[in-house]
Amino acid sequence: MFSERKKGFSQMELLTIVVIVAIIMGIIVSVVNMGITRANTAASLSNLRQIGLALNLYANEHNDIYPLGYNYYGDATWASAIKEYINADIEYDIENIFISPNAELPLEGGTGRILLTYSAHDTIFETIGENNIAPNRIKRQNLPNQSELILIADGSQVPTAPFNNQAPATFKYPTGYVAGKTSDGLLDKFIGTAIDEDTERGKFWLRYRNNGHINVLMVDGHVESIKKGKVKGRNLIAIDK
Image (cartoon, rainbow, N blue to C red; front, top):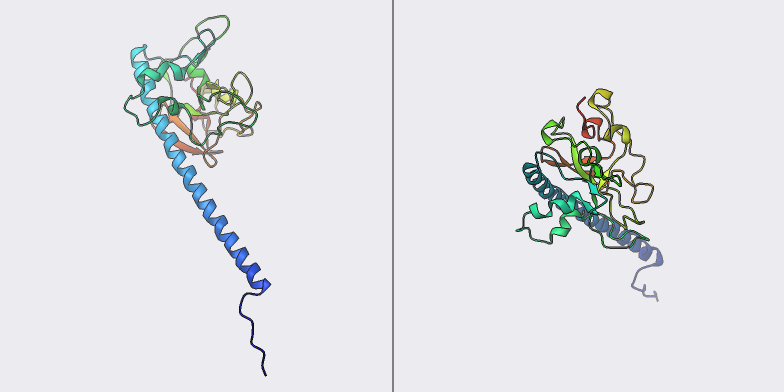
């Protein structure tokens, strides 16, 4: 008499099924995460578009000059200076306009409420320091390459005081470009991206937090997402000399 074969899966068959399911789940998670990042990137670009409108309204009323990047005496940033110009009909809290949806909230070891993850061009916005001397401001109309010059961009967040998870109000590096001149011969050179991290070391640098891209607002008001390694000198050099 023949013995009846037992129904069911062998260990090898079960192992194969588990591996296949794990692969499928990995693909699904990857696709979902990519979709979330893309949606957040689009929301971030929308934030920058609103910021651009507000900055232009501010400049229109202040002799064609943008607000200070940071005023040590008033403890105020360019973001606080333009809040009154942000469209009041937006669907969410105005505070969220200045925070990228792709930012790390909060950073490991960081404390404090996060109010800003975008940084302004340091040469254009500048700051008033401890000597309380107003800098030599550059008028909007005198800025070169306005369709290519970055005004606001994703900035690296810093977990330690005084930033406490926020990005500095302005980005300063690479200094040779941010503080450079068109006559320096650097317009078509690609800038370095060696420091791209939310750490004390990354302070005052740009941050490519959107799946390897940086979201930027240009002087002419349009926004775009630039791939890491594709930012050129003409995107940062603000002095036309």
